[in-house]
Image (tube, rainbow, N blue to C red; front, side, top):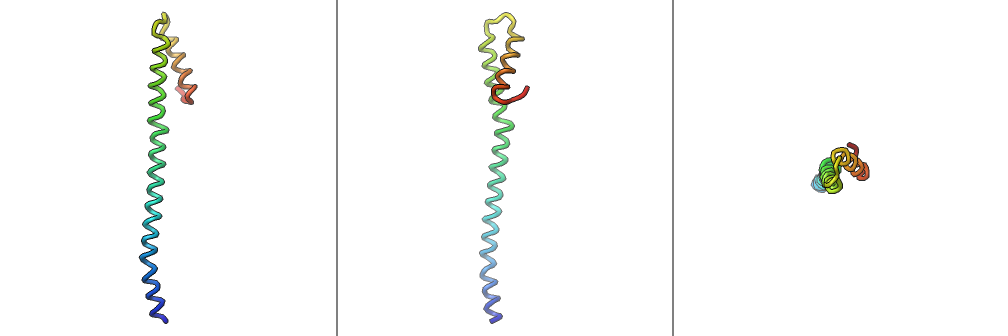
Length: 86
């Protein structure tokens, strides 16, 4: 009887190890996805929005006399429309 329990315990250990490896892989994959999303949301997205707002500002003020003030206003409005602060 005692020997049967020891054999059963030995059989279960590899399953637990395999199960633990799967859990670690899932946790690692979730952390990678969170990091990728965070990088996109806080780095790439604002850079793309600012680039778009610069282009919009220059298109609007191309032929204006007081282009500096007008550009600044257009740029700030564009940023706030996209949810960014200065």
